[in-house]
Image (cartoon, rainbow, N blue to C red):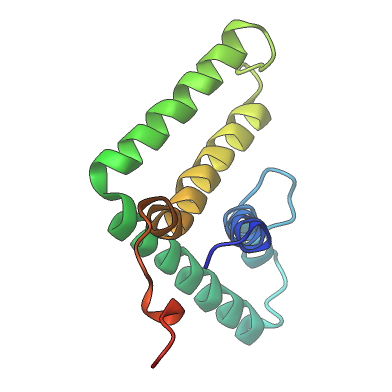
Length: 136
């Protein structure tokens, strides 16, 4: 059953996964493994494994729930929104940091909606999930 809290938690998990992997602020997994000190390599390996698992889960859930047409529709919708913001001078795409954040936000939107879409589809279609069936 999808609730508002479940929606927010799943979107935050996606946001933390994508922006935790890389972001231009310098505080990400990418920056952490590129640091000069070789300490805590086992912790870095564990964190990397966890990030790969989360990204794989998100990508698989997105592909299974939305397929190519759904992912394409979300990407096109996101790109037209970015284009509109850029056209109205609300987004400066000449700044590399803004471009990076815009791309990362797009990945977050695509993976987040894909992660949620199967729940939304069940809710909109009125289908019954096996977890919601009350045994006789």
